[in-house]
Image (cartoon, rainbow, N blue to C red; front, side, top):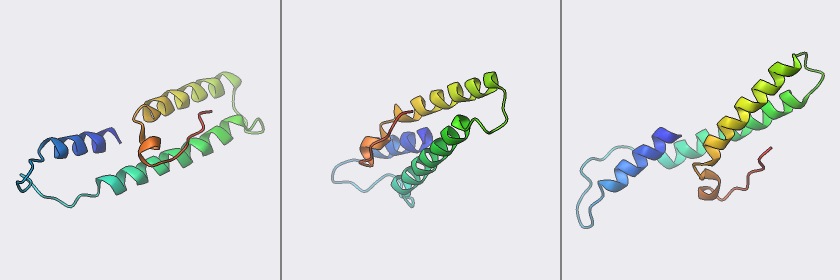
Length: 93
């Protein structure tokens, strides 16, 4: 997602009013970002469900470490403000 946003910024920085773009490529950035963000959200929800399911046989410390890592990844993604871009409300767990 960070790479897609960086590509989008590069593309925007190359835009010159009244001039053709310096390069033209198929531009799936918006679709790719939405797809990646949707995949992240669904995976995040699934991971939380698994980590909160006490019937899953895992060591308590391992479960806590995985939760911590998941929260760190979520924080990185949420800092990209993609929810606002796509008009979604996220519930941070």
